[in-house]
Image: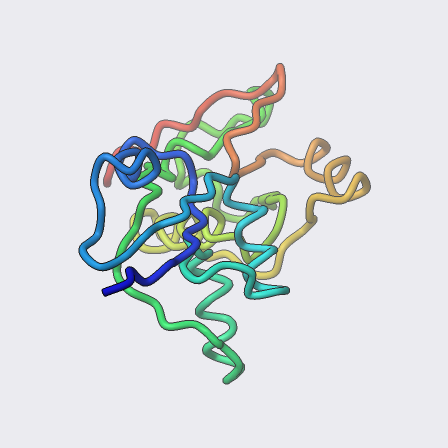
Length: 171
């Protein structure tokens, strides 16, 4: 019997390397593994449904479901294992010493809806009581300038020279 041919787009993770090299094979399936950066996978799937199987942004998928227009079936497999608590940086001149100090501050993110920002807003709210609302900026040059003028930036672990990783131990 001929094997089912599937094109799989996923990051270049140690957890999926055996699928990528073919040293582990799924029974009855021939995999064409396409290692790409997450942002490219999400855009290509979201706009063109270009792959048979792919990694997908949780926040984008939930948004599509809430609008009633998701063409995808999600399965609970999370190849990206990253501790998002380590992606919050503070301006060292802001006086912020703990997550609780975010109360009443403006927080910048490259995009409001990226999964990392959703996780960060969630743990700030659930673990530290910091309520967040609409974004103050996005990844545009004007938005980045606004974020630099404010006290915090978050997501994608990008650091500026006057930034420091925020200590986020559970309360």
